[in-house]
Length: 217
Image (cartoon, rainbow, N blue to C red):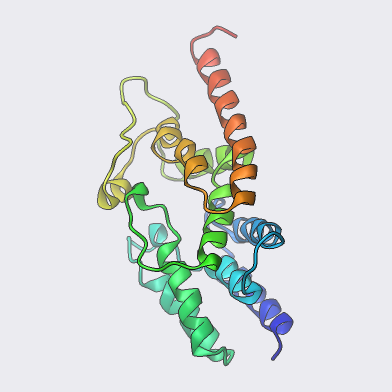
């Protein structure tokens, strides 16, 4: 099986697995991350097959929807790739991307490093900011029945991984606890360039939100 055939099979597998996924973590999220990854990869010397597989499989079983179990995603990806007779070297690399891509409160120290991880992580983080990021934040907040905003509940910007996973604060707080912090955590030059524009959009959105909340506009 050549690389193109492998990617086609992987896309079909991911679409089937995420058929009933929450709207911010569904196939369309994967597709956007995949497109972001291809865009960044144009400016980067990297293993494109690893990038493509990492982007497509990074949320194959997000721990948020599996009682916090972070082992299901890597196991699912490995089983699929083994069934496609992918080399062990590529499988290990893709699994390492899945295990190290998440934000996890911003205090998570990556246990693996590669150009491909940097690239896929940027691609994923880009989908968490800008107009899409705003939409995804409120979609997930609604999914979890969280308040839009509560002026009496201040954001907590320095959470542990466990505190971040258990956090149930209003959706607006998520901008300060994660989304507005991502611009300065990008790895690649292209990722930083795109993130800067999306960051400005979020700042504009928040200014409008507060004005409307206070009845000023």
